[in-house]
Image (tube, rainbow, N blue to C red; front, side, top):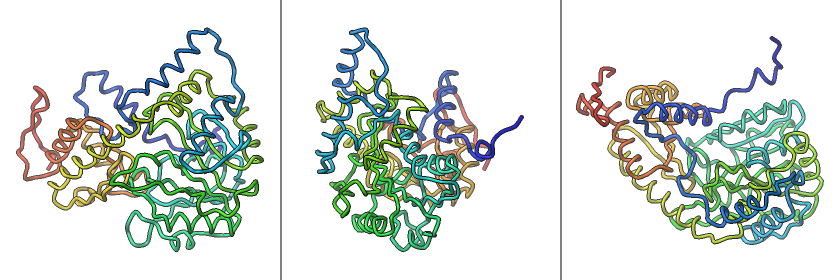
Length: 405
């Protein structure tokens, strides 16, 4: 069988594979605790359901414009005004089937083979593969000081004549770290000066903790016109807990959006009208659910960090937002994939290996679950790894005997 070079180079989405694994294990009745999930457990906002039900009851479900309905674009324009203080026009907006598609069509629009795309590490697992799908080269940048807070000099050291774009995701998946205002300002101004594209992946930008404020990238740009190479992407999946609705968007200059729309038209056409209606309801409806989710995640983060302190030699950077804690377990095993598999096989706790995010020895633990799951999940991990723990553990009525230390 003949497979393309690009096809051969693309790996499976680690996060989606683990979710599939979790679903299969739960269906078999396994006592699984899912600490790898990037999916809030909140219910869909009632305004989203009401909007969705209204058009569903009409019985008229048709194609939508490739770049989104007028109503969807109006909701995004309103969102940009409220959270970015930026007035845009409908031609500056594209609605897509999830933020992942918005980023993908943006990359397909701006990249040529052998172009390079820079992004700080650790990074969301799909950045590398999406860049490779365009025949381009991903360039992860590891901060030299060993932290998760990149500096401008880290970026500059990786810029070459082939650099076409930079991607920033803040607060970051998988670390939850929020990049400094100075760093974002420096990157925005550098990209403008050098004519580079800057993709701001702001999917977590309203889920911030400890009183931290959003950094508005438009505050630092001088090119508030159609020559701008700034692309801002966002969606409803995280802040509204609407992961299954697959609605995201991008805001950029009109020429860029036009080409992105052409590409999307040959991929999927416009996002489903039902899902756009639901997204409109969430964006324009009561916003208290976002704050409720934010408070829950902040509390869950605190509980998880407190439990992790019981581990000797384990290091966890305190997240500024999102819903992950990126934990250094290298004192137990520097191979994060092997460690993750051990925890799944032995104590039925699902975690995400840091290797998939560009940094081995770490595990990404999600704070999306219940307090009960977080406490019990961390207790199971400690029992599996700590030789000072009792040799036996009960999970329900099942007795486990630790024979691997």
